[in-house]
Length: 447
Ligand SMILES: Cc1ncc(COP(=O)(O)O)c(C=O)c1O
Image: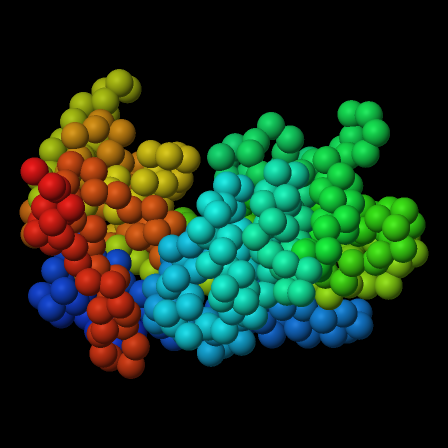
């Protein structure tokens, strides 16, 4: 094992060749080509289990139940939906497409949630048809639309997504509970009832809806747990206010996802046991303060389950030394993928770590920037990393912790076919999502 930020199944032999789950990178590249997303099944499953067990244990201690939903937006395929469900997680979907994958995997509707700030009528209808366990409604208008699509005989189970004003996470675009963004209903009132309270009251007024509870997701890649605790207190307070006003004490509270992982060596991921204990003790204290019994909780980790389990394997092409502003040399190392298989560095300035994985090098390192093959100077895969000075065309290079929001945000920019997702377990590989071909892309082009 190389250690963080690599998956636990990654090891480097004395010849410098890296293996994942018992398969060396040369075999992976020869069998599946590059670039390829490589997913360490045992690592993914063990993270899913750790989150479930940590939360179940910590919440049992405060006398509350908890469900763990895997946030499919991080990465969803039929196999992954199956794996996480086998590990006791439910599946959280954000679109009809993700819902289709979860259903294809055989996840029962009751174990699926549907999110989205702009669900289409057909997405709502499909969710109701599938009997999803919960639809998380995001606006007052949507509450009406879901109610209109359901019936009093078969009411739709809904949670109301609220924003608490807690701003957490690495980048503005991945912080979702502050006020000036598109998700949820604010708990803050300018005058009269807050949008969140209006939403809850509206749900209660419609016999076609069952109000399961309140949902709050405060952001992503959160490394400081205090944000979860402040948001949970705000949600429990809102729940108590609704009970005082209407006599209805909703049964569930979802605290969303956002558990941070290590992307770089030396970074420390949130520890599931620690965070579960901290959140459990803080919600227990908050519920006591507001004077209500505890609800059933749920959480929705995505990145923390699949992110560290994945890496992207590339082949190095052009290597170019470039003199930069301070007079020093930066070595630009181009790989055979780029922003089409990982948009996060360009989108959020996300940082990643890369290593040459196909051989040993005793050369001293140089300051390198790993870039892709796209027609954008912002097509950066790894902003800054030290690589062996003899890095050269043909080298295999791996980028760590790309399991989340890599393939799921991939594009066909420059008509580059998207890489396959290859699972590795016990020395065997299995293609979960095959490589796209130019024929796939041309098949969409109607001339
Ligand atoms: C509602 C909701 N739940 C869960 C997640 C998963 O977040 P993460 O992958 O950071 O755990 C997101 C991410 O955007 C989200 O919007």
